[in-house]
Image 1 (cartoon, rainbow, N blue to C red):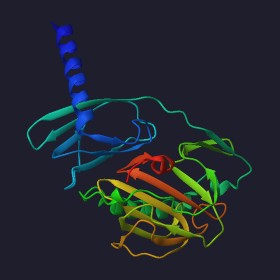
Image 2: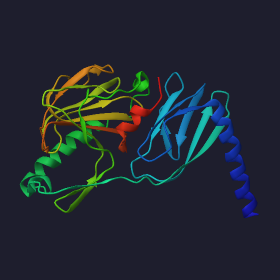
Image 3: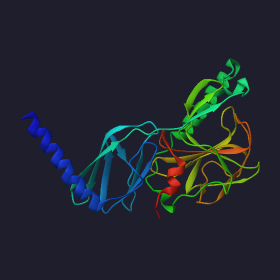
Image 4: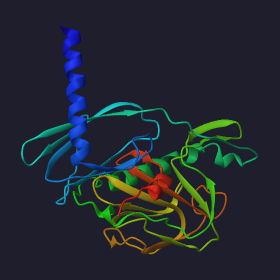
Length: 275
């Protein structure tokens, strides 16, 4: 009897997945480190596992997968006519590069005890700013995505495991673009400035933009910011200039993207065929 029940659940998932594929269009791949945009008709609400998703007036909603996230997910969508659709998503493991950096100054591989109080305060400031992310239903990102820097060399990719002077560090959660100091930095899509921070120990001068529905982006190590907190910016609007502030070894932009706190690969956004 238990086995029959399992078969019934699988059959229901297969049928509803077929239905949902006809009514909902997905942009992005179901893989770790990816952001997914879903576009449908008359969507009342949507959940992925136990997380409720924001749905805007045009039935556009989104969700993301962390760089290290794997396993099965169930996407549940209810339409205005009362019909509920289900889609099973299976996330495969994703392999990342290992980046070994030797002969760096000790300050770049360890954190001095004397700075821990300062770092804690800075993290509290960031946490407070990020607590506002996810309160906007509107999908500001519907204007599409662009690279925040024109030209430049990719000096570090998303997901690389950094080993500094033989010490393993956290997974690199953004894309580093090396360009001359003063190079203009642009908003990757429409959004609201949630944080305009100066001289943080790690991130230096940096900006956090809220693009709606939990999507947010970060622009680190700036020499100058050109925006204010609470300001609405458009895709392609200049928001700052490249520098080497914070814990940085040379002029570059660290461009990070997250869905809430889940780490998303910025390079994958640029490949998304949306709008």
